[in-house]
Length: 201
Image (cartoon, rainbow, N blue to C red; front, side, top):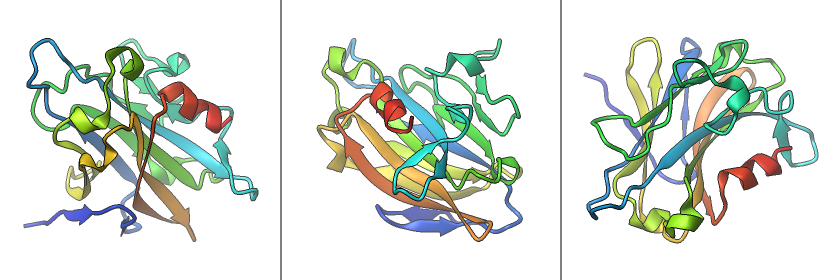
């Protein structure tokens, strides 16, 4: 029987070298308030480090999977990079259903060598219009799985410390000495997806 490593903010989980393909699952509960839905969106961004302390997109966002990157949209509603190293399987707008509500697959072993970080964010769609923040969303989590075996490797449960926040960098895959780890970053802000995209330009 395998056990899941539960991450807390700032904690990290080292991936063994035999794991080259991972999945990131985002889940949350449907709102208990009638007529109120929380539409959470998972995004992942392949980044290079410039040496100036500010990560930047690799290839002008070519390795950024999110619902807003329409250049990557496939006929089945998923979003996939041209080299098939990153794929977002589609948008869940309510949190309905068991298990993961949104899934991103990443082939870490096949990413361009220049990419040394894959940042994972969760944002709330139309948070400004709906007046929503993470303090009202229940049972939000991110988990990392071995894509080949579907074994859950680690999990980060987002608690109420993100009340008042509308975007959270939940974690990052970090490459050091050709070995990947997943770090629970846990940094929230009152931003939207557009603000996040702009900061990595």
